[in-house]
Length: 206
Image 1 (cartoon, rainbow, N blue to C red):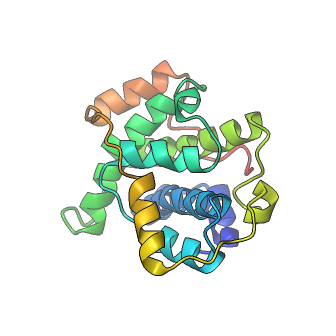
Image 2 (cartoon, rainbow, N blue to C red):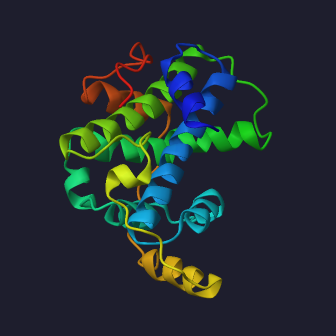
Image 3 (cartoon, helix red, strand yellow):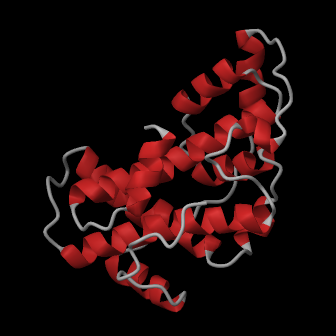
């Protein structure tokens, strides 16, 4: 996915399984982009940072997010107390991601429940917007900017094994798991945050 595609998908306003999968891919692309920027800020050369960001997978998402934002010079604890981020992260990880997996792996071929689709799309879009809002709040550049705008230094010359060991060291801490959500509890959580499934269209792209 190009950054232009990312922006265009966020601006769309559609209710379908296909669009839900595309917007959820944007959620994943957000993490990949921040990982690339963070690794560059750590001094890893662009070509290796891109390779790692495109292929890195950590099943422990709590640990991953904690290390990811630290790499980008951000305090994950502060992010968790910012706006609705913590609740939206829970919903994204434990509800919308679950449905993304069901669709992608063929457990469910299609969803005809438009209310469910609106809920899933809203959660993912609100999650992305909350991250954008936090970056803006902290005076950070947009994820659509080049790493140099984040003040990434010139990349160090590193052997592949050194890069692998560095990444392993950065993402080695385990954090506690989070609770699951169903359709009713996810919808209730959005309402608690004064959000609803009618707010699917992104207000802004930072």
